[in-house]
Amino acid sequence: MIYGYARVSTQGQARDGNSLEAQKTALTDAGATEIYSDAFTGTKADRPELNKLLDKLKSGDTLIFTKLDRVARNLSQGIQLIESLAAKQIRVHVLNIGVIDTSPAGKLIRNVMLAFAEFERDMIIQRTQEGKSIAKSDPNFKEGRPRKFTPAQLEHARTLLQTHTYSQVESMTGISKSTLKRIKNL
Image 1 (cartoon, rainbow, N blue to C red):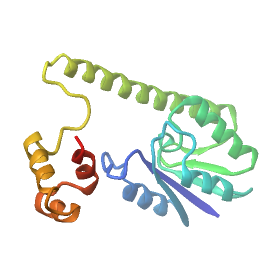
Image 2: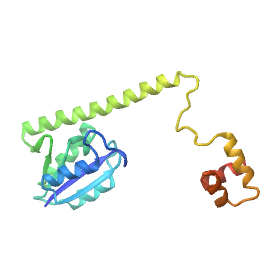
Image 3: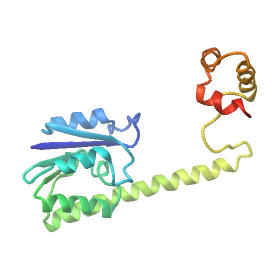
């Protein structure tokens, strides 16, 4: 059986041909008959759909993914996964590299590509931290998501709660019930 695995970091991710749809299309075109996919960070080894797939694989199966960084974002994680699959005699096919075998050349290519994936991830983290550091130098910087409602809007909603139900105030103001409950006693 030929299985495919696709992963994006977030459900809405659709850049550089790495969207779930683009990956699934490429996997199907490469012969995958059953595809598992996660919208889950690649830094975690414990991904629900990947775990289901790994439990299902048996000797003689083929596992296809579009790029190594879709299944592992660091060297040790990738080596461990690929070697465990090879030990079970499961063929690993990475579309942008080819079939990864256990030959010395296959191991070298695997290790170099995984090292690049880990390097790329580390660079993303470094750039993000540098950007945050620069942003924090602005005296108006506030960590986190911007507030959706002004203090005046929230105060108006709190006043409305004295004479209306949560549902009525929610429909009048657009402020969710959970937010209304949180601000009611402030």
